[in-house]
Length: 237
Image (cartoon, rainbow, N blue to C red; front, top):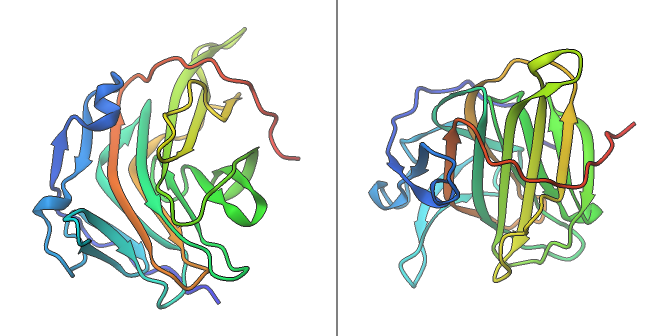
C-alpha cells in the first residue's frame, strides 16, 4: 500500500549552469551537483515530497540519488528554482524488475500537480499526466537494469483565433542507453487551455519491484525551448 505524502521542507540549492539541456540551447539550465552532496545522506538540495532519497556512490565512482523501496510509496522530490512559463526537465534512471513486478518512474514540471511524464514498464508505455490525471500515452520499450533518460518540455504557443500564449505544447522524450536521443519526441500534444505554470521541477519513482531506483543527471531549465516537430498524439478518453 502506498504511503501518504509528507509535508515539504525548504530545500538548499546546489546547482550548476549548463548540463545536457544547456547544450541543447535550453538556457539557463540548473543541474543537481551530486558531487557536492554527502554520501549516505538525503540530498540537502532537494525538497522531498515522500519517500527515502539517499546519495550513493558506485564502485566506479559514479554518484546517484537512490530511491529506497522501503517503505513502498510514490516517492517524489522537488528541486531547483521555481520555474514559471516555458520550461524543461530531464533526468536519468536505472531501475530493475523482479519477477513480474515492475518499477515506475518519471519527471515533472511546475510543481507537484503540474505536467509529468512517467515510464510504466508494466504497460510498455510512457504516460503524460496533468494534476495526476492521465492525458496521453505512447509506446515505449523499457529495458530492466539499463539507464533510461527522460526529458519533458512545456512552452506556450499561439492558437488560431485566441492569440499568442493561449495554449501549451508538451513534448516528451524517452530513450535507453546507449541509444542516442530521439530526433522527434515520442509524445507531442497541444493543450488548448491557459493553465497555471509555476513551480519547481520534480523527480518521481515507485519501486514496485522491491529494488531501489537510481537517479542521476538531474536538471531543469527555464525559458523558451526548441520547436521539435513531433507526431501529435490524441488525449486519452
